[in-house]
Image (tube, rainbow, N blue to C red; front, side, top):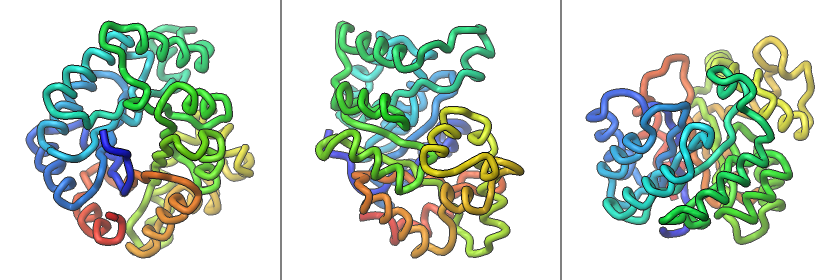
Length: 288
């Protein structure tokens, strides 16, 4: 696998929906020059979704942002990575995360326990399988200091999500100069602040109820008043870059200046339709 650089696309629309439409979107995104396509995991057949994207592309890295470690055994993950790599080339980057207590305990109360230890055990499992998943083919969803240290020691690096450029600098310092920092950045391609912040608040609404994210945002200087009423303008503007193509490119560059090797942008709108027009419009400004 080549070192991951440039700009990628993070999109749930590339995971859920008609497989034929997803293939067409993936083909176009590769043609536009985006270097990676990132998809989420909240259960279901994740690896078939990865295979759709890998089958539609030839050069683009396909990444999970993130594989939920509670929902896939290490043996399954390592075996599927080996299978997909053999079939489609060395382009599958496995982003792994501990998810959130409310989601995991919903089906089995008390299952979500000691997430840092769970991640260590999962990585041990990946190393012990018949076809181990190499550390350079995995990254960790890491926000806090301990998970960032684990990402440095046991993986290719970190995939910070729902963060600011200030956090990217913290991540770079934590993982060192040689590890991968692949930061997600939400964006709204509109110059209307009312529309942009409405889309931003809709996007952020789930995250402002999750301690993993709010604890990290507190470390970055945000407080209770920033989380109230859907999020303060200061918080929404920090998490969701908005404006024209140049303004969004400037925020992406802030992450690069702070130490990101790769930035994957997640276009947010007030509806859930695939933002293909925005992907096209942003490509000339973001693709390197």
